[in-house]
Image (cartoon, rainbow, N blue to C red; front, side, top):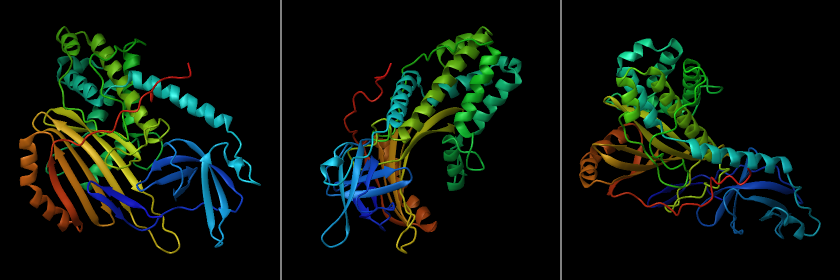
Length: 409
């Protein structure tokens, strides 16, 4: 069993990294299909334990399965994977008992996801509204909690300038993911959005936020390609409210936008838990573990980079030692560049990267700078195995139907 880094041109084998639970012959363990690896390999997880199995019937991502442990004629452990409840087919073995609490929890998560999907909207509309309020004379009359929450949200944006480096990018991603400076607890973008919403509710005396005015982006996904949000301008409703000095209406518009943005951030978290049937790899075979939206500032406007991050767990076993293997896919779009997508695989110090650009002129500009990027990456200690630019954008797998249908209420 081999851990892999998927790249646009194939699969790179790296150090075996499977974490083996303490298994005994006769065990039947309830597990979940976390990911479809390539070449008919499934990754099964149970709590903090995981196991990659090959040569078995492939179950859908998210399916609950029973792992039976036996012993082959050569004395080695053997595994049989079956649907939950099928394990009793083996003589002397009993199926893992049903878990009503777990099923009830999954139903609640499914209902919550359906609700969040109906309310979610991108971060870009919120930031455009905040920018309009900040540029208005009415900003001077905002209560301190609202002004502080606005300032904090502006402060976490990634600044796309010539000083951007890996450390700043890492901090920005951690903040967008909800991590605090100490590495845990309440913090980051989710907490700041919640703070803004609470401050706006107090200011509007418990008023209801005005629903989003435009079409929301598609829900976050691990399998479909990134969905960047372009830097935009404030809505007509927001500009009209500010022009007539109606700060109460502007606050309710902002409240609706902050609630919708928080719904998207929370939905991204549920998607990353792989409980929504969205863990299947895309048509290019690349699987990811986490998706998040990262706000960035370009000039006076704020756009959003959509990131998908995955890692082959590498704690090392049998004295092999750790061997980090990461993959990242992201999309970014501005008025000047149009849609751009990239996928990067990092196997130790070996780097594989491909960039796509929808516009021909953008692809040409990226191609012209590829040699300089190659030199910069090599100077940082990376072995650049593959680095290329392709025109157009890669295709998506078929959309999975019913993912956010509330089947409970």
